[in-house]
Length: 139
Image (tube, rainbow, N blue to C red; front, top):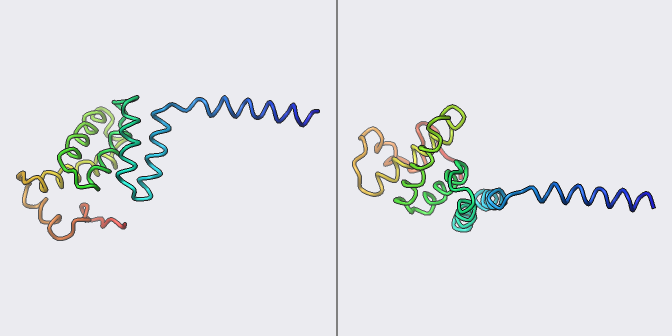
């Protein structure tokens, strides 16, 4: 009888814990899993779902922008990553790495859209599209 009671209590507590996840968090977790598997179109759907619940989420905006860039949807990537930079403007230090990546993809998007980009920026893109300011991306 004690074992059954303990199991019921554990099940109740676990259920309460799991129910604390928000729809946006659930979408983020699933989207991140798909993004890491390089299933960018599928991941994008989940990041967009999450943004319906939390439109100002820096993480959801950032990962949506990354997926759009990977799918060569340059104008959308540029727009959403610009939004991400706006959302993190007052917290640059905590978002330093993501902001750097976002700025890279924005420059890449501008280049791909035929916009004028400083020659020192385009040179590295022409040499190797996976080049990010001295770091080669491993896929």
